[in-house]
Length: 358
Image (tube, rainbow, N blue to C red; front, side, top):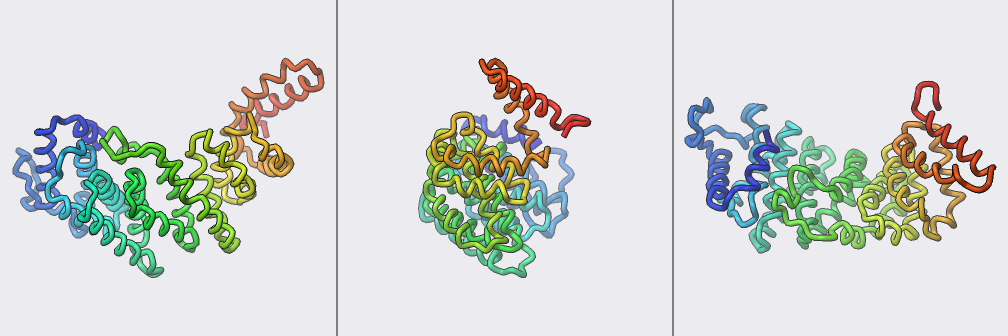
């Protein structure tokens, strides 16, 4: 239902879009159900309060689909009150779908609001609350606060808002956190990826061009220095964060930046985390067909690390089709030994993952 609501609201004419925003805000802030004929809701229903029922609190995803898909020209009424209620819900609710939807809705509204002191003060208040929860190791609400942090960081990154640096610096610091370190590393994938249901151009989000390249250029040095300073048990978090960032860069940027990052990417291939290994392989794959000089110089180290992965078929299976396609060319090589080696290699790759295969 949410995708249907989102698509419909994104295409509304200005007058109807304004009416829809007004009714949605009245419903979720005031419990006004008068515009819903024949409904069975109690009067003054509270849909954004954690104390309400589990099923009602998760209806915030409907609000997300509505107000975050409207054109930026549509003014959402009482937006400060709405965002305050969403902040409260995202930081206190115990239901993952509800607090995640509330965080995404807050982020969608923050992404579209006009630049100015009103938005800045709202974001600063939220950052103070989120950091307070995250800095308390005993807080039971750290995951809720982290979820809000990552979605607001993405909302601000996409529009080049100056406060996004504060949020991403906090995200970098969480890579050393014993409990949230792996989640923080995964958070960089969310930051760099396209979002299907919010913060995209189809939902009229404020998405600037080349935001991924800008983020990488401003933060790669922090990641490298953080890795060098991190204790050994925390280094996998930095390696996964790095591979998640590089994986989403355009190929031409990857090739340009590879020499400076190659040692870390090779290190990532030795990380015991399969997720880090898979993400790093995806980073390296686009440049292997036409390797830059820096990669050629490290060929021995690369081959030794790749060989160590061959004992785990599940790790290399996603690359099976591309390897078979690449091995088709040497089948026509003028040298018989090359053709023979290509036939054997293709045969081994054909059997990979099949019953009886390796």
